[in-house]
Length: 80
Image 1 (cartoon, rainbow, N blue to C red):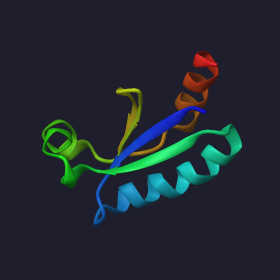
Image 2: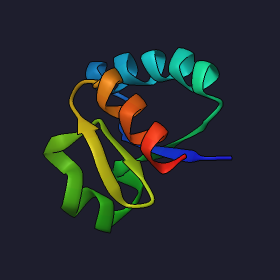
Image 3: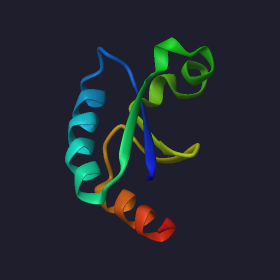
């Protein structure tokens, strides 16, 4: 199963919005979403601090700030 990673933080409303939107998309597309707290990992914080939320697949950034549904769907269709 394909796993997407959402780099997020607890007090971020954009992060909460993206996580909520990803819930339905994940169900529709049959993917898992792992939510990772950017503030719990110094390397992630150094890389993504001001960009959260960031949606990744195997380290590749798919979108940040807002969920780009069409881009994520196209990417997932492309990788099969």
